[in-house]
Length: 261
Image 1: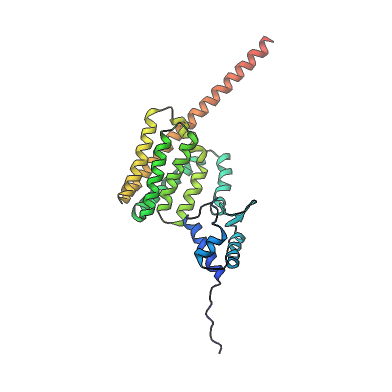
Image 2: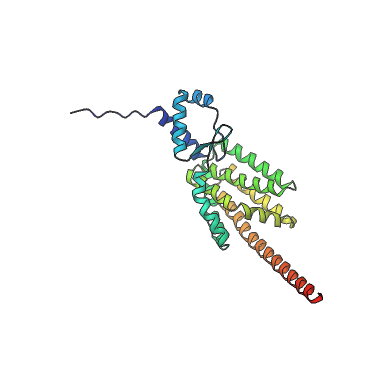
């Protein structure tokens, strides 16, 4: 009888798997450009044709794509498959925001707990950098910068949890909530105490993870989301009142104009 042959993986398959693992773990993020062929081939110790074959395998899965002008970039396929349909549903059904925040509370509480247990020194360094950037952003009068820094901090927590699914789900949720985060921060700028509360909440999350206190980290994350849920609800009510007042004013003005003419 013929002996069973040992299946030796192709070099390109091994390289594709290594690159895919970096995308899954977040070392390579959506929008990141892959290093030049020469550098990658040298790093993996393979020929450039083998490297090209590996990249083509990832491209066929939709994980990377080449762009005009050169370069191969990581796509957002892992997140967009979740993000795209829900973004449309969020627009059509505003009540889903509450469900999204409820889910985010569960997810971020778990992420913070795991981050406190699992974060490496590199994770803690990155988390400290994102926390410092967030504090700097809160000191600047730039709403886009503040919302971007806020999302980056929470994503750093999600990735420090070292669970690939949680990390990518967290990124997708933060993208879904981006407009609401931006709106919320804009409204909170007019409330002096709110900025201090937000800074203290983020500081509590950061400290609990840094000090390896899982339950404290979970509680801090959940407290933060509870605050966000309440203030966002207040914000949306305020915006709705303004829109109603504006419509009434426009109606009264139109009636007045038509009467005078």
